[in-house]
Amino acid sequence: PRVRRQRQMCIRDRPSMVRYNETITISNITPANGYRLGSVSLTSSNGTLTSSNNTYTFQATTDGSHQTQWYNEIIIQMEYETYTITFNEREGTEVEDISYIITDTISLPGCDRVGYNFNSWKPERTSGSWSNGTTYASGTSLSGMYGDVTLVAQWTAYKYTVIFDKNSSNATGTMSNQTFTYDVSQNLTENAFENDGYSFVGWATSPTGNVIYLNGESVSNLTCLLYTSPSPRDTERW
Image (cartoon, rainbow, N blue to C red; front, top):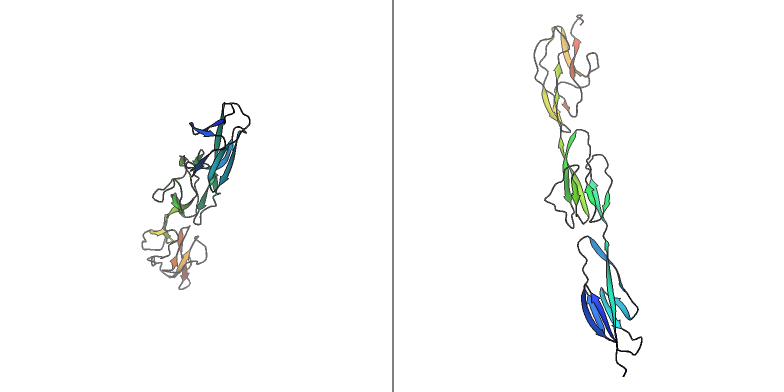
């Protein structure tokens, strides 16, 4: 006698019996972290597969009249999701974005900025496995990460010292070195040197240079030794 064929379908290694013209439905397929749903297909032609809104329906079809079983599999293929690390250098040297997938090992680059020491990268606008509460040093190696993220450079301004030179063996008085922080304006210490026969008019950046900074002037980001630049009150010359 004629009987309906049976179709056996394997879904994640769990077989389900489906008779001719009957259907089985798979829905809400959720990829693992770092993956996206790729293709869904059958391994043989003894059934049909239709899809709608992440729901897949398999229907067994007939191809003869003998009592038997056929096997079919629904192959659900996942693809790697590609993510982007964007860098906010905050006035540092440009750092190229990094594209990666979950199986990549990521080595975080450093960054340079005049007058500053690079501390770390701090995540901002995170997703996936990135956390706002974590910081990453230059050269940090990461694996198993997923999600888009913006990493913001964290800087500490250098401190530097201004040294005052009286610019004459005849001048008297002393002045302590003055500490500055890069990019922070600060008034120069008032001149405490004296030289008989001369009036102090300002500071130069070389022993014979012209006045660049006035007494007590607000300055920032100096990179040189300061020398007194006296002006004679009478005919005496150095």
